[in-house]
Image 1 (cartoon, rainbow, N blue to C red):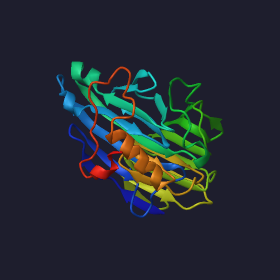
Image 2: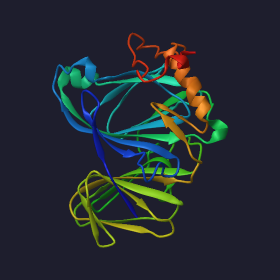
Image 3: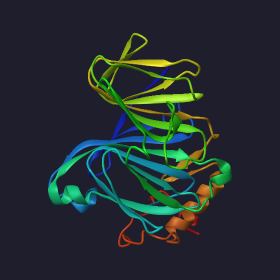
Image 4: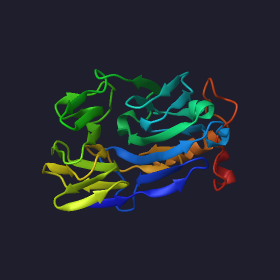
Length: 294
């Protein structure tokens, strides 16, 4: 079992805890990136500088899931969708998409942000698929199981005898668990690569204790039993490998040269901005060489 501590990073308006990629483990199944957003308490009147302005992606799907708060999503395929706790925003970048994430409700009312954002690498044969966005909510789309201090929601893929509604492109699972103190639950050996991010609380696994902010990557082939030493929130993820990926800035691809093309397109202003949020965007990193501007 590999233990990955979160690395806290300030994004200019709030902090995230980065788990993936990690130097000793770049991916878990197709999951190539995972950030814990917050927890952060936003005051009413929050500055717009805290928002995530329009920026691009290729070659991946983004997964936004919140424990607390609200984020407004807008993108270049015309979507405008707020996400709230227990819901899923599923954005497939494919050949290229841009989007923004704004904290408009917190700006008006104040509030707390706490959630997880993941990137899932697309298999090579669909890396250039047309971009799309879908929002899912409710127990039919995100199957929910509740019993005696254990609440489990399947967000993506298949697992635990259930299947989520969002269309995925490779075998994977992504789930949200809430365990009351003293509750035990098992993660079956259904996929070759599996991990758990302990968002809060403390759990015991195989006589070892792990606290919030820690990711655990498990060996294949055996059920992993979690014993909650306190109330705990856990994100479980994994699937089958899709091959190595190059990552630079917001771009993911199986081919380094494809990332260079995307960099040139963004720097030259050739990627369409979100239909309903085109007034500002995140500029290309200063370290990109002038020769890459296309």
